[in-house]
Image 1 (spheres, helix red, strand yellow):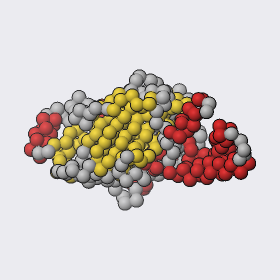
Image 2 (image 1 turned 180 degrees about the vertical axis):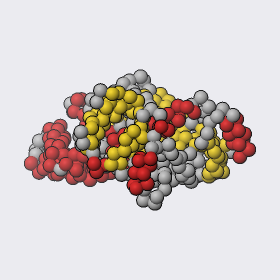
Image 3 (image 1 turned 135 degrees about the horizontal axis):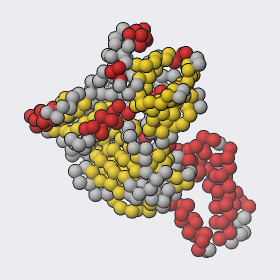
Image 4 (image 1 turned 180 degrees about the horizontal axis):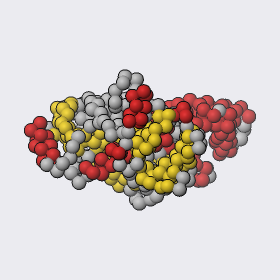
Length: 421
């Protein structure tokens, strides 16, 4: 048999196909086989194989063209390249990859093999599969059980669309991105239902990270004491606080039971050790820190920080009271540092998303809000939104441009109101 044809057949056989596509592909192949056998009984063996393969591929391609849902499913097939290395972990930490830029974390898929569930993370550039994984770090921690990923040189994470699929895993409890003030670094966390045995492999050509999981039935859960901050909305305020705390400890950002985020500086097995460390840090004038007792996969509790400034001017405070459903001063909000252009004036400030409107502050939040805009009275237009964000706010004859660094700014804002493109 022709060697090129054999190689092609072997490569085709090695493609890993998720369960949702297997049935459709198998139908196409079976139809092709039957048609070939019916029409070409007297043709030699090599020609039969060639014809069957061509017809199967033709039917497969036809299915893609006819069915958008089939094409979408095919697009989400996780692809595994050649093994670079199996990562070795020290104190739950490891890493690998090469320095790259412009990476898109393009897809996350799940396969099962040899008793392990494999989470496959693919990378692309300019809609082409990337050859090497960008420089990355990975870290496994307990109480709750999480694996966090830092991907250097990454500018996009199209794989957010895959998060819902990932939640179907029997091991995955939650998956979410975490804020970073570096526009060439993307971080995300996979939170597990319980303790897991894990293996992480770096692959190339195409680039992927493969996380293999199995339940750790021998692990004994124990009570731990978390030295943590209060909970914040997702936004730059959280990122700024993390940078402030970095000299103290290699912290992790976690999501709490109410979907807000906090920074955990360290976990301790003994409460007295946690109290001792807290006393040391308080001498450095860091506030908003306390100790939370947790065990196993228990979701951290929500202790919200007061993000709405009490120093806001009287008119703005009145607007907030009118907006609040229960009359409380503290409303659900997200606060983002921004650069503001207002006519010929440029200044640094902050934009705060409230349930029913926006507050625009100068650089000093305690001086109170410069403006409050009700969503129903303004037009919001997205001017830019990948490695940075830029929002145009039009209110009557007033136009304000607010811009900032990479974040989930527009995703967060769309929770409150609509934005024009």
